Image: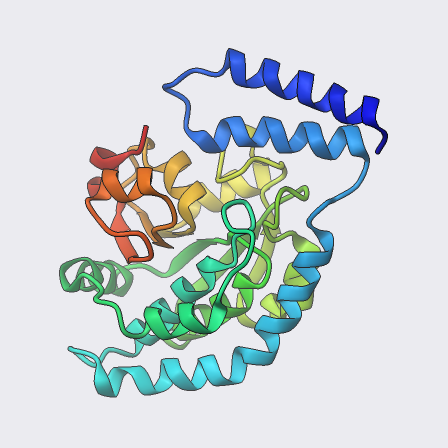
Amino acid sequence: MNGEGSRRILRKAAAIIEQASFDQAPARISTLLHRLIRETSGVDPYKKVKDQYNRIALAKLPSVRAMAEAAPASLPGGHPLEGGVRAAIAGNVIDFGIYDTIDLDRSLHDSFRFPLSRTDFQKLSHDLSHASRILYLCDNAGEIVFDRVLIEVLRGMGKKVTAAVKGVSVINDATMEDAETAGLRDAAHRVIQNGNDGIGTLLELCSEEFLEAYRSADLVISKGQANYETLAPVRDDRIYFLFKVKCPVVAAALERSDGDIVIMDNRKAHGAVPR
């Protein structure tokens, strides 16, 4: 892109930021900025890194499965679900909307070592025991390979899992193309698109297909900080958030440390929405 094109993007971006409200979730403002860059440049600037991390994650999948399967023997309570939850959260570090570089091996190590709230985990386990239809909101490309581990555990528990990805490319969020590459169709009962390019899950922009899956779900598993930011204000007790803390604002809102692994139901999350 030439210099004038870059200046045009900067002017429009400045206008978006100037008109933004402090009450808006950061993901909503970021959606507009990334849409501007993508539509003005005519390219997906994250396509290469998405493909790269799909490959990296697929290469690590056998070892991550082994870590998840071995985890119950060394974790308090010994529930097979916990290994799947920890594997899924480990992948949440693959976020190029926040990081320039990532250490995936360290994230995997930390996710199987850091403490996970026993109360929150037991509540998720209890609510899953009464649920049959699960809507799984995916986050990033690459990360969705590790989501397969948790989805496979859920299916082993007899759950019918629908996985949802983005309808349009934005940052390095997973799309249907990434789901195909990652083998997500082999894990979930079905994979759908949410019909838009919103960062997080902006229900007012989602397709009817997605909304039908959302309304009919017994329980919603929501991956990533952006989904937390956009869905925590929704008073829906079916939602559970799984993510790694990746910024000081979220850390302060949750009274957690950067890098912590989080599992949280929406009743608790609603009182801790970052601003």
